[in-house]
Amino acid sequence: DNDDYKLFVAFNHIIFDGLSANVFKRDLQDILDGESISVDESFLKVSAFSQQMQNTDEYADAKKFYESMLTDNEETSTLMESIDSDEHGHLKIDLNLDINLLKSFLDSHGVSENVLFTAAFAYTLSRFTGYENASFNLVENGRDRFNNFNSIGMYVNTLPVIVNCKNQDIASFMENMGSLIYDVMRYNYYPFRLLANEYNINSDILFQFMPEWIGGIGQSNDSLNNSENDIITKRNSSIADLVVEVVQFSQNYNLNIMYCGKYSKSFVEHFAESYKLILKQIINVEKLEEITYITHEDIEILDSYNQTRYNFKYNDILDAFNDNLSECEGNVLVGYEDTSYTHGQGAFIANEVAGKLDELG
Image (cartoon, rainbow, N blue to C red; front, side):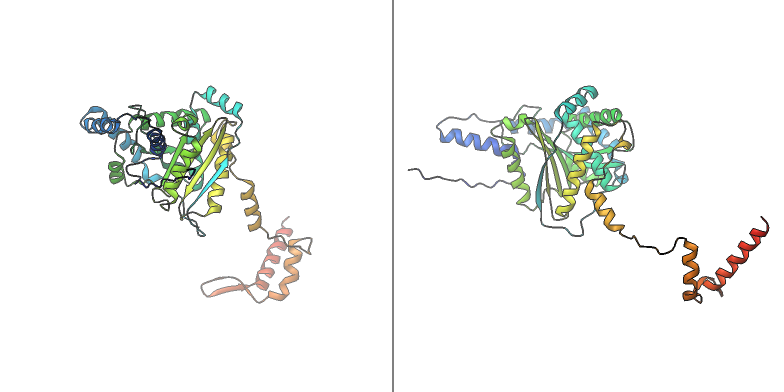
């Protein structure tokens, strides 16, 4: 018959990442269509590699690298929780990037999209925490080493980074960001759990760039992203407090933010607009200090705080003081220990001093 059937599945995120959902759906469809699927041994290869690396010089190098970076962890800060926090949620906006300007910037600085988008996120985060160093985690698919993009499992790596966002020229910022990303990707085999225990770091804030080619694995990027969204938001964002993704769709780039109840919707919207503004300006300025990250909404909020205009009926502040002196002449102007002077006495002394100064010319 023509009845539709739906399959409901539930996988623990510990053994199943977002990309695995796409592979699973594709393999299941192949089986239903009568096709065969190959046996996947990638998980065994990855496990063996992780075990073999533990007693190597490369493993020791990775430990030294993270030690040199994460010892500055005390010089960073986390995002403050919103007073008016809401339920967990998901925000998606179009970054509206000028593709020609983007490509020109990437070519002139010799960096990838991943480096640029991550750098913009680091700088945005530093503006919101008020610290020059931004601390967060990169999300890396973990499938490049063995090219196991058609495998099912939990291959995603959480890579902690601390980015120096003090004022510097954009070229240096991009170069430093590129070197940092290269190193953390190179040492992605070092366990996050060991770093978390030793340096007291967490996975509360995650950032990831998802290029268009990932969407070609099984299904569209939109579906891939929705798989991850479902896992995170339905578990009340227990994986992380804030997950930020830049997702490529052909010539367009979207910013996706999944957040827990620590942050309000208005805060996340503010963060997203600030990221969008900072990203566009990084491409066009020479130094970080030239970036204007105050949004139109920020200005409106500040204006609302400064609604202190008062129609003044005097042309001179002294006229106002003298006119009102009679009403508060006996009020204490200043006091110290057992001695005090009233407004009237203060005015008399001030007039005497002014008169003497006038005599002296």
